[in-house]
Length: 154
Image (cartoon, rainbow, N blue to C red):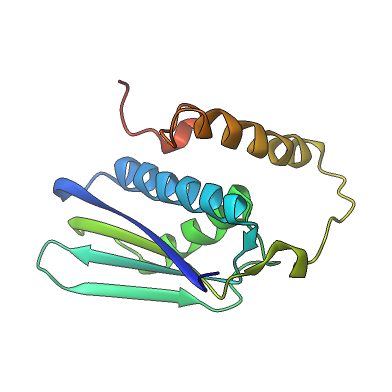
């Protein structure tokens, strides 16, 4: 099994719109979460690399970034958004995002299932395998996923 996995996206033009940047990052998170669950793995760390319009690259890594090792999209999303916020981009023009899940482990090595009092979270987690199955039937082409990950209709 690989010990890391990466997803990336390039913008067609220098990107200033924080809504589009966030949607692109959420799309990467969705892709990585689905990949981890499909492999039966969990991640213990995330790295976000951003290429700027001037060609420079900045990287932020959070070792043991997740509250608990996870392959759940929600857990990955929370940490990825925190990493993006830590950059403090105001008017930076972005060209590319790369998100890497690192320190991967087999899911059975994870923390296991813990009783949660958050019914909404439990419902979202229960939907993940269903969405994964729907998307897998279409050759991996994503048909369903979080609305925030869609950059435009069509």
